[in-house]
Each structure stands twice: as C-alpha cells, then as structure tokens.
Length: 209
Image 1 (cartoon, rainbow, N blue to C red):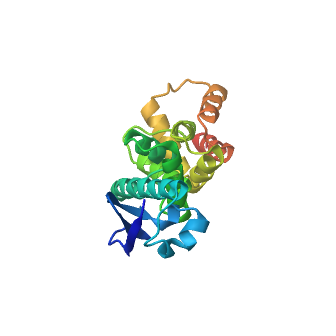
Image 2 (image 1 turned 60 degrees about the vertical axis):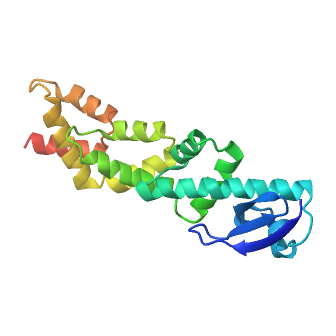
Image 3 (image 1 turned 135 degrees about the horizontal axis):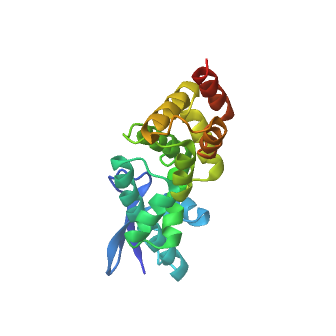
C-alpha cells in the first residue's frame, strides 16, 4: 500500500499524525506507538509503498490512538487505576496488546498512578456515613487490583494518627459494642480489623483513665 502523505493531526494525543494512502481510507495514529526503527524514519516514508510489517505497525498505532482517546476521556471523568482502566478498554473492544501499550504510556506520563488512585479512593471512603476499618480498606484496594505494597503505603499516608484514631472512635460508636465486652476480646477484634497497636494503646489508655 502506497503512503501518500503524513500530516500532524490536531488532537489531544501527543504525536498524532494523519496518514493518507492510495486507494485506502486515511489513518490517524500516534507515532509513540510505532516501533523505534519505524518512528525514527516515519516522515521519510511518504510516497513509498509500505511493507506488510510496516502497515501492521501503522494499524496498531492507529488502534492505540483510538484507545488513548477513550482512556483520556475516562481519566477526565475520574481518577483511574491500571487494572480498572485496562478492563474498561477491553470492554470497549480494544485488544490486550493495545490496552497494555496505552496504559503503560499513560503511567509514564503520570496520568495514571495506582498509588495516587489508592490515596484518593481511601479519602473518599473515609467520608462515607458507615466508617470502614483499615482492614476493609486494604481488602477493597486489593480487590480493585492495587498492588499490596502500594495499598499499604496509601493507607499509611491517608491514616495519620489523628485520622486513624477518629476512625476507630466512629467504628466503635457505629458498631454498638456492648459495654461489658471484655477488653482483651475487643482489642483482638480491633487488631483484626487493622487498627495499629499504637492507636489501640492510646484508646485503651484513655478509656481507662
């Protein structure tokens, strides 16, 4: 297939170009998704006949362009995470190789950050009426595909001492624990729910002074 011309495309996508062909519909693609040997000589190909491999690379970069546009619309609506955005692109019928390439590039541009997503998600959950526990927050993040190490780091950032202590008090208030519940069993339960030893020490010291 003969490539007639390549022109920069007015688009939110960095490196977008419009490729026009002889006897075929034009393609809009992002040069960032082309393999390095091809992207380096791209504008020298105008007027030449593309090989089967070169045409396949153009088609892939064009699909990535479409997927990146879809991903940016989702990111503009709400913070995304790697697993969730990949699933949403798959739902929109982009294949796994295209989705992986787009998600990787967006992460490199800091438009996609699982740690940032986790922190924002935790703060949103802390504002709900029914107070969560640290263990519930951790489990929920893992379920959303956030790496355990990143999830724990996000929890440590979001739950400073005062925030965690306030969360503990709200949890105890909403949980309506009986007054005669033994201290040992209550502490064990709260530890299981992920409250830190320092916060539990503070609570039981203040509760019995």
